Amino acid sequence: MKSPNGQYEVVRRAYAEIRMGSPLFGNIALRGSSVAPQGLFGEPMMFSNDSRFLAVEQLMDAVSGPHVQAIVFDCSRIAGLLCMIRIRGYKAF
Image 1: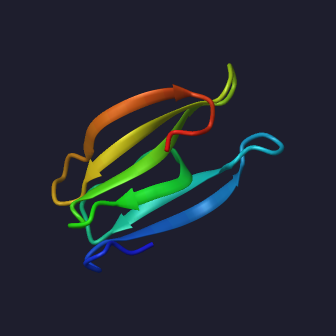
Image 2: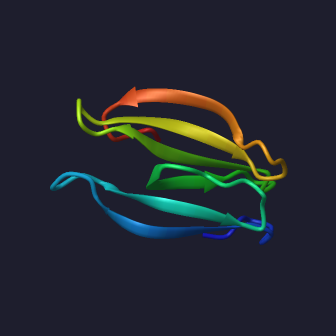
């Protein structure tokens, strides 16, 4: 998935179900930015209109029940995490 201005690209790798019937989660890389996302990420993701921010769904825990959080990365900076919103279940967006 490319950003609106074409400067950044999200590359998804190894997406699979965590449990039978669950949404897909996997690894992502952010080309064109020094941000290096770590963890398992869901398919819902979106760039801001100006391409500076990337919002993604991150899997936090699948053992004690699905827990995800929404994370916003600032693609123009090295430090990526701006905010987190934890949600019980698989839908962060």
